[in-house]
Picture 1 (cartoon, rainbow, N blue to C red):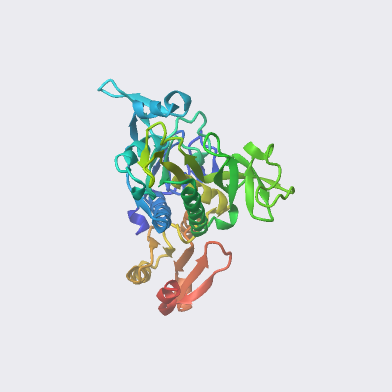
Picture 2: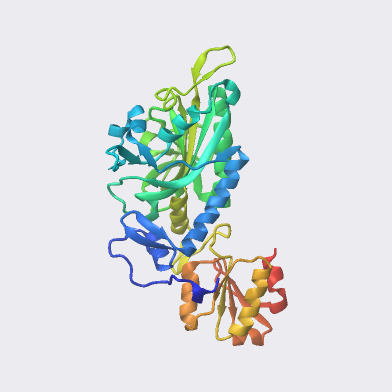
Length: 409
């Protein structure tokens, strides 16, 4: 991608009602645009990052036999009334259609997946299975003040699993937990993300969250440094020790929830009469689990965690481009390097704009691609280009004939 062709630009004028670091930085860098509180457009750079997050999640969900589907964002009122949540869930966006019927914009999809599964589950022979989707969700948040961390409209992955026994759900739950660890490691958040015990509500004794440490987080968690798990503040009064090892020395810190997993049991299958015929001929409720990850929230969390005073420092796995190539009045030479890198399958953002070196460097640091290549009179006189990792302060000169080899590692 040539930066001169990118329809968006880095900007200096920021929304006066935006306070969160993640949103301010992503708006400045041209990744997102704010439409309203908690509502954002994803621009080309931001959409590239989201798609890379999506790709990692899809791979890990398919690795645990998840089958991808897409369900409606709009749900009939009757579905939500069946579970008793039409009146009880205060974050529902409710709308009326021209057919004089009422609908909800789904913040979650239990009310859609359960009656859908009912059309295909009759016997224990159809179980177990798991399906997932990545889709826009809606929450009527009273305070959408944390940028992508608390949106009214957001992109989320939810996977639902269906089982004939509690033991089978427990086994799959452990499998999904390991998949989540893999996801956050691949996203560059592995060393800062903790499996966190939380209240199970009406579902079970515990649910589990995945919480990423950041000072901008709205949650307080208590970490056990012995076994690397945490406890959410909501249950710390009744669970003042580590639930795994009994350690009483728990460390308080701020975090943001980036994923959660629940053993739903029969909470949704029972109201919808989602049953199956067991091997002994009896009719039983299907046992369910659900597993969510917020993609847009992850994008905002990465920015909160991975930055310096100049801008974003993207993990290589989800960076919009691997290389930011900058030409300082040497467009012909830079063009050859650009084409060579593209031919080698390297993702490159080529800054071919007619701007000063300072403006180009500032934009490169703000955008945060993992590597910066600078083609200048000075570098060419030394037989190469200047290479600098975004996370490092020092740069080096790399020979022209070794550039593609360097990025093919």
